[in-house]
Image (cartoon, rainbow, N blue to C red; front, top):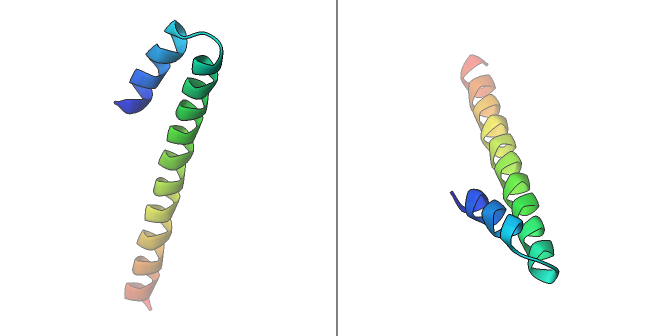
Length: 52
C-alpha cells in the first residue's frame, strides 16, 4: 500500500519532493526483494536440514 501512495505522490510532486518519492519507491521495491530472498534462503536451509 505504501509504494502505491508513494507513486501517486511522485506523479503529483515536483522537484525535490519528486526525487524523494522516487527514492521511496525504489527502497520499497528493494526491501520487498530482500525480504523475499531471506524467506527463500531460510526455507531452503530448513528443507535441507529435514532432508539430511
